[in-house]
Image (cartoon, rainbow, N blue to C red; front, side):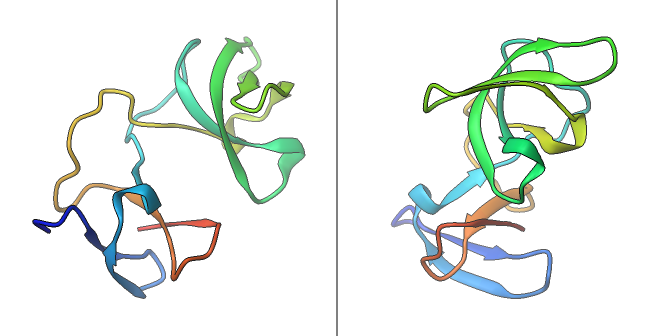
Length: 110
């Protein structure tokens, strides 16, 4: 929208209208995470993702992650890590995103 907000159709079919840019983020559509990539990862396999950076990618596919809050975790399973769009291109209709739903702190895919 002209005011910088977004409408999101979530993967479960629900819809969010006029979501602020602080509450929506683009998820990069690509395969493997590389060292230095901006990522989000689940700590100890829990459900919530936390922002960080991929420090090392091991030959077994696990990833060492440095989280933004200063914590580190080694050997995170690849399925628990997702790359974020680091090229700062503006979001467009049809982009894969995650957004907070109705003010909740958790991000949901859409």
